Image (tube, rainbow, N blue to C red; front, top):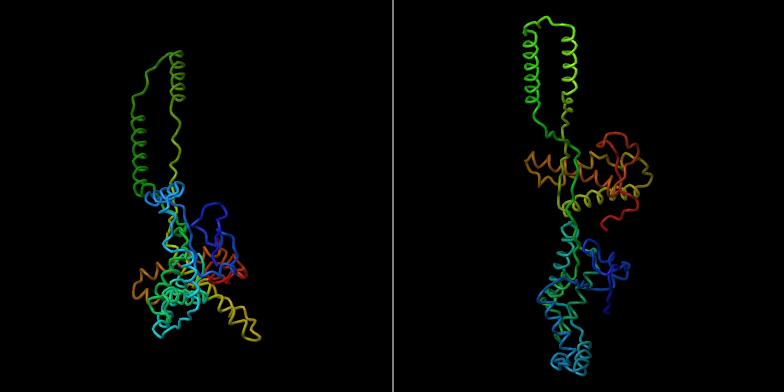
Length: 354
């Protein structure tokens, strides 16, 4: 079955999955083995060839529209190929298992941004494509080369989703102003200058005795000078900025999937135990989740204290985003207690691994 679909807004959005672009349900998409997205991208060579072919067709150029095989030849070839039933050899079986394992590994480890998940259906697609390639070559057996070509086609058809890196706002403030000791020196200098100015004014010679009119004029002049003085400068406001941490989407997805899968598995294990109603054993605290993930990364941390602190801070930032932004995790009980003491659970509507 060959089907075609247009994106909902006329142009394919790489930041969304295939299902979000064509608005087809998952059961329908799962019935197809290969997906190819035809993107209208600007390319000088491709645009030239397309324009030349269309113009040649309109000019009724026979060399353009004449196929290398006639329709009768193609029908006879297809009828014969359908009669073949190629068998999978032992070598091809091993290659099939290895190719499926590689597809699954790239999907479950969070290193790929695919538009759909790799399941057993993709293994069945590998088998069907390998058998089809054997029929295409009129071969009675499925050779490893056919399996590798089917694997290449399947990987080529997996639409990758472009996702930006994840940025965390740590909320830490940094002072951009001068250091405190420099500010103290400036203030001390100002006090000394003020003191020296006061001493100079006190040491000034007494004013000569003048008349009443002269005294009035002098006071008026002093009042005018006071009004002309510039207003005091406002206090200097220190600028603050928040420190940000940025990681790749693959790393964020890997950490979040590991945490959500572990928490959901604990919930399922508790449900299977009859009479288990102890909330303490069901839900882990924020701090316990961080400790669990650090134990999983023990080989990566090694003896590096710096790597331990980096992963610990990063895990806390990921959990905070899962709770406040993505709403993958929910807080059980009182949310006013410190973060590390809050109990966490996976949101009931969240599908782990989707």
